[in-house]
Amino acid sequence: MSGAAAQAYGLRQRRLAGRVAGGGIALAVLLLGDLLVGPAFLHPADVLATLFGGGNAADPALHAIVWSIRLPMSLMAVVVGMALGLAGALMQTILGNPLASPYTLGLSAAAGFGASVTILTGFSLPVLPQLTVPLAAFVAAAGASLSVAALARLRGVTPEVMVLAGIAILFLFQSLQSLSQYLAAPEVLQQIVFWLFGSMLKASWTGIWIAASLCVVAVLPLLGDLWKLTAMRLGDDRLASLGVDPARLRVKVFLSVSLLTTAAVAFVGTIGFVGLVAPHIARWATGEDHRLLLPMSALSGAGLLVAASILSKLIAPGAVVPIGIVTAIVGVPFLFGLILKSRSRFW
Amino acid sequence: MTLHVRDLRVRYGRRLALQVDSLRLEPGVLTALIGPNAAGKSTLMRAVAGLQEASGAVRLGRHGDMDRRTRTENIAYMPQDTGARSALSALEVVLLGKVGRLGLRLPADDIAAAARLLDELGLGAVADRPLDSLSGGQRQLVFLAQTLQRRPRVLLLDEPTAALDLHHQLAALGRLVDLAAREQLVLLVTLHDLNLAARFAERVLCLAAGRICADGPPVEVLTPDRLRTIYDVEAEIGTGRDGRPTVTPLAPASPALAGEVVSR
Image 1 (cartoon, rainbow over the protein chains, first blue to last red):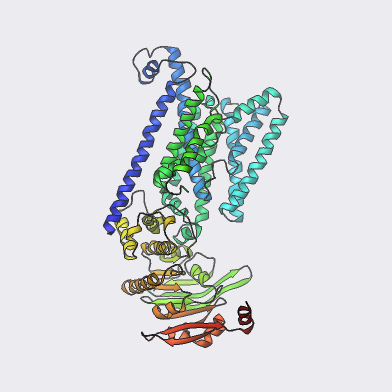
Image 2: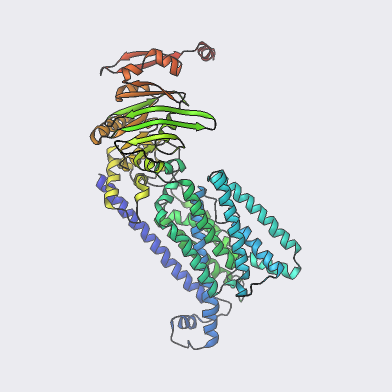
């Protein structure tokens, strides 16, 4: 009897791991689709030839469009989607709340404020000026997350304290952001608003490398904590009785989440909803074992964002609608489907 | 190995919530911890397990004083059911007993051990069911299996039978007594049901207002006088077929309270 239970568990784990692999394949297909569409109306065969070599790969205009515009935009969508999916799953776990997202604790508002102020003042770094706005967004968001972590450390690292501190930070930075917009001249305001709409048009190879490295740095320290995160769903009391310090784990994970989120927001602006819905899709597919849940959340986040990117290019032919505007259009049907279809409780 | 506790003090603010000068718990037998609500039973267990800020020393066998971390590792405390909702399967919950020692790949031994524990507690059929689809009693047994999965030397169980029906109360406590004898575990169990304490415990510790007020075999600790002072009830003590005392509570002892109940 107990042999059967162990065997059933093994089989189920393999089936769930298969779903993660399936998610990877789906992402690859979406990514290819994203590369094939765009305002330049290139022939798919030409795009493929340019990507994989052969054919008239030598055409410089074609080469430039594929390698300097489409590929960076698509890959940025993958990196940002993964970061937001992961950050959302981690946030929902440490706050024990299905409504939590990477932005719940004010990180995006802080990043937006950092960007707004830099655009408003026209300040620019002496070296690598194109990184000025991302860096400002990053610094502001890091400041916000450190204040939340410090406040929680003082008052007890419970979800309630963190949510309250985070909401306070959120409102503070939203006000500051509005203030900087109010003070801005009309053409500067337009720049600010454009930055706030998340858009892949801001993508660049430099941005991709930096964002991807930050994500790796954020995720590596958590590799040894996957089981602890799974156990966190049983409640702090039980986690503590199993020999894990919940407060310490929560702060550590929150700092990782902050790094993931700021890496995503700093380069492309605020992209909502992906971080909220991707973890739910993943939880539906793989359950709560974080060894599978986290990779699946990253894949769902990337898949959703790439799908949104395809849609953003199809809505208005010849133009690219900022992706932040369409993510919810792609994500909401998924969320409704989950709420209605899911056989067991999905939270 | 015997567990020694010395000068254990817990303060909540200025209030001294627990004061245990000396306590030895021998391995191999079940010791019941009884006492009225808010007597400090959970506090005592949490302090011994290193989950609660406390002064004093805890030693296991001939080893020296253990710091809080070593205590958390060697002493398994099972909290009361906190009602956590989770879609993890019963088997996964049991596997989490070893949470600090699990790697990315699970050893087949761990999975087999977890499945065996569930089987022994009569939960083999629900091993792959999500935790939140189980009944309160089943959940409690799953968490008991989780605690046993740690293979601890010292086991502190807080109300492990509260949600169990009669059959499972007897079965679970019977298994715990066997386990303690077989593996020479130190086993301390909080019990509200004094009949269960009388039936299964070799020794009963009675805690009131944060201090141990009685300590001995059930027949010495469970007397009408003591139940009146500690629990404020009139009770009849009989003798069961196994020669152990039985407790039949009759009425609240203090007249004011008794009158209030009657007038309602």
